[in-house]
Image (cartoon, rainbow, N blue to C red):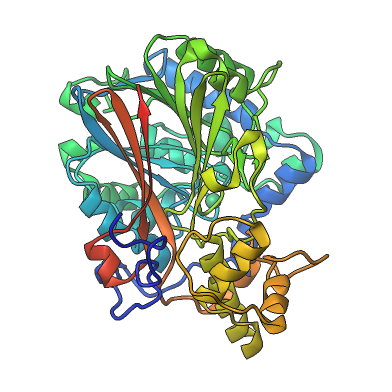
Length: 505
Ligand SMILES: [Fe+2]
């Protein structure tokens, strides 16, 4: 770890002399916006699912049945000829198509050299997963990544009934019911208001696909000359899958809108998990996040975490998106340690880490926990946004003050060396206003901020505090590395290594 946010403010990207080259990759300067009335109206399925129930399990069953009908592998297995030693990338929550997504690309290409494939975990396309938005939010940003990309959907991909996701990743034609917007199957108000999936402009999609049209980018199936019954090339069998590398199974699950598994997927997961190879789980929703445990229920009983913890199943790590930052919880299960990772910082606006309390979940101790951005940088980042927006200079805390304030509050070893700073009443007030120190209410810095306030912040200057993962199987171990993308040229040239863990296989 040469220079990173744990070493210096420069490593965190605070001393950004020059903006990165990612600006040149962007198709236009438009910023993704949640505040447009059309965006909000298109996102209404999010509210409907929350209030009136999540229809994704029943719709997923139809997609899966249709894929089987088309001749997809019955075990949803993807053979990957990666060799004894190999590496791959994992990115979470990518698809906003704006500066913060493109800022990840140069570092990802650099660190991703020689990787066999990449995986996107959750929210490939914001706001509603539309098949018409893949050009600038998927194909263009990753056009120079030379290997296949697999994905598990996030809640946002489901707001389109998964139509865009299934079309792009699985080459699936629309479901008959999808053409009717699932309305006949959704009773009452939800059926009436539920947004229909976007009809896909196939000509535009075919043109967009050319951006990642090389055989090596399209996947193993093509090289092996395997087609499905319709004679189409198939890259990914469905919304959930298992990548069989021969050495390690990488199991991807689809947690839909509200973070649960349908019965059929649960049965498949249990079956796949009982195979003898060591495994990593990739999920749309993390099992441990923000010092809380979300075991992910399976319809009919049991949870995904029960499957992960069963020693016979040999899971060594779980990686989930959904929350737009990086967190790692080494959880001891009997005599083993399972690494539970959140990695949702692959593109969309950063969620705060300074609101994560002193970590004690699942027996993890605070000083074993890792996050990026550091809580102090997260506090400073949000204080800068709000102090500018509200014209309140006193609300700003410097990165150094941020680290000192958060280490005092959390009671941990300061994650970055800091001078002996005296905390003033003004600094403590700012930390309270921003949710870093206890107070009954504070300014929004989580999901609510992302939806409603990030738009007002004109945040187009680094550091962005984005992250991606590089995983490698070397010898008898698996190494997970978290790299930062700040948007600064310095960290594009040499992406900071923010965290690293080695797991014996
Ligand atoms: Fe997300």
